[in-house]
Length: 345
Picture 1: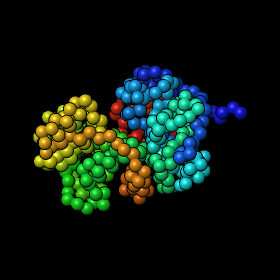
Picture 2: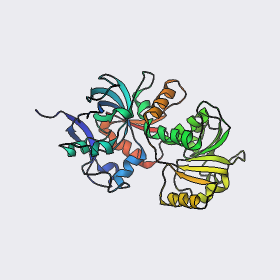
Picture 3: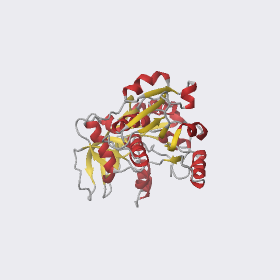
Picture 4: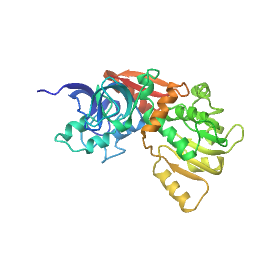
């Protein structure tokens, strides 16, 4: 019996950008014991998706070419469940973080198909039950798909590293959020303001009013002298910086930090890791903290619940059909999206 096929997007080597993507038909994946098969309704891009294409995780990912991009953040409808799945059934609407590495590593007679069918730029995908949450009718597929990596990064940085309580309790903290109009940044502003915080944010001039509308108390154009120097207009020093931009040296952050201030770097490079190690070795009170997000089901449920309650919103930069996925890819590489870029099968 011939395998059922689906439309998908893949690339066949490192580099190439949007021009390196190709549209193909591949077999629909089958869910393992602890997985659900989703008919995808929306997927959202994160910068790591095209950075993997550039080779940032070489040789770990991709394990093999051709490769369907990871694109881990999806929303869709359950169409089939594995034999061990307890919480979902066919017809359920869900939001998932696709765990591509797990699917690659599991034993199989046909490992090539699993690698090919690993990502969210396709009509169907398999997702782990423990990284899948229910999506209520109040949350659209696009809103839900925007949440996983970007929303969870902001949530983990603010609640676990900075110690902000989203119910508004606790002492006030002064927070700086760089690149506040982007995917992680726009969630970070909103989540921070659910806590007892004063939020200073940086963004481009065209997005100042937008970032203010998210709740930021003061907003800096990053291209002005004060914006480049990260100087709070009200003269505050920062208890924590959620650093969503790139190319800002530690020497710019340090004079703007409070005595025990932390810079949480969501895209740490070699320089950031060296600064982290140096600050640890010298017992500095001011710290740089590299953040690698650890997706957790309960945190994703929290975010979906906040969207349902109207306390958090996914701002959608643009929507693109799967047949034009290369346009979404190019827009993400350009780096000036306001909110999330969505692909819809």
